[in-house]
Image (cartoon, rainbow, N blue to C red; front, side, top):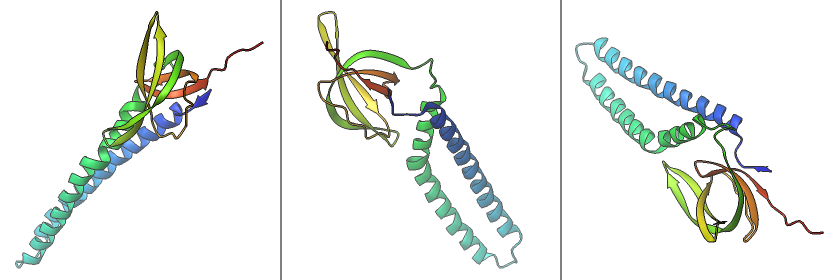
Length: 166
């Protein structure tokens, strides 16, 4: 079985990265607030230069925080929330799916997923499922059968099923 996502490593890395980002932003905010207040309180009576310096520092800080919370933090939080509840019990085991093809990528919280279509038969009806592949360049072969393990429609592991011949 080919593993596309290592659950233990992903869980540990995403949690460490999430906590590190929260701590870093908190420390940066405390340093900017404390630095600007102490700069104004410890200045001489002519505090114009300190005021201009504080305005520039706050403008840079606000631009950085806006950029960070729009672009970087959603990715970190998305990985953290994906791996937080993932374990061997929550993985859905899909027995027999046939690979149809790949369609346009999907972006969620600045994270790009490859969208793969798989078909399966249930009774006399044939259904098509969209499953997602995250951080993997694995290529599936068209019209081949696969056994997949997924979590929230994200492919964790795959195994190609071969026909038994005698």
